[in-house]
Figure 1 (cartoon, rainbow, N blue to C red):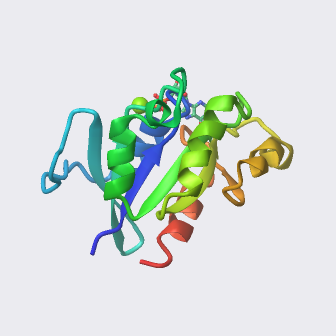
Figure 2: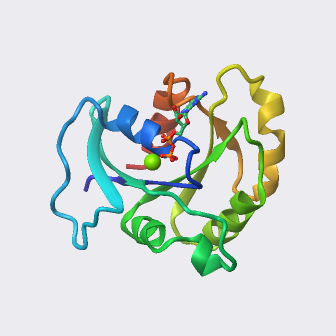
Length: 162
Ligand code: GDP
Ligand code: MG
């Protein structure tokens, strides 16, 4: 079974940048997903001898009231389809209320969820991580998707059980 990784989080945190990095060595769009929509993008990638599928989502707005609105339908669908959820936040913007709302949903989800703090290039890693522990999703993983910093280390760890 090929593990499926969903990228979720607010718009502009770097989901598509990470998607492109994780899938760029493989060009295939995965066609065998029921309910494939334009709101979600599917790609395959490989690390070492492990193949994985990644789902990019358009982003959760966070502007609306209520958890259903915050967790946009396509993000919920992507989480449903996934074995692993990478919840991305922006290390430069810091922790904001919308991140907390999304985390509240993810904490009660059954899927294995990793808290990924992007855009840590030029930031001091440890101080930048401080706030994000309060999301209750365990250890925050600093990466810089645009530069590849820590990306393969993260994917290696999340794929370990597969
Ligand atoms: P999405 O809306 O979550 O898909 O975010 P995008 O992937 O479109 O990225 C939003 C913006 O953040 C773009 O301008 C990216 O170039 C920028 N970005 C993404 N990753 C990084 C990173 O690791 N470091 C920095 N400094 N900027 C990044
Ligand atoms: Mg995007």
